[in-house]
Image (cartoon, rainbow, N blue to C red):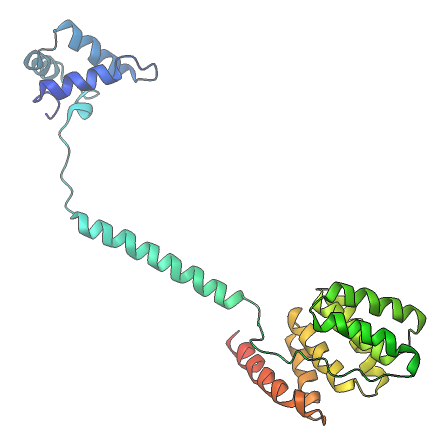
Length: 238
């Protein structure tokens, strides 16, 4: 028996557990027996054998050697971790939304509807080109209050809403221009499709990209073809 064959280890065990209050009664009994025999391991062995203690013997039994080598245990743990990581990655890949790697960003040169908005648009575009979108958005909204039917202002309001993460407001503006017609129809359809991609409404986005492909806006056609192919491939995988 392992502990009884090593008096030093047995003594360390006793001293380490002597003051603990949560010990099982069998362990407490063993410590009392050890003290009564003054730590004589041979005497302890005889007492245990004579009394055939099935409670204390498991405590003193020698450790069983494992038939599984350590390297196989480590390999099994590694494989489990690896499989777990692969499963987590596949779950993420299956669930992650579609993202557009490169998109048309230039909203185009403003088409003024009357001279009264020329100064307003000049200030708006100044801040827009400096990527100061909140300031540009503030100016375009102020101008819209004075002239809410100006297509240029409605268009740039939608563009800036999209850039400032107000996707739902951008959709309202782009839809209005798509329904109304005019010089901003193709660009509005394109950016509306981008809004739908962000909301994971991929079928609606594809429909709009296909309409843009049929338009005469050469700056948007190549992008729309690429987006349509990518979206169809994504939907086929998912």
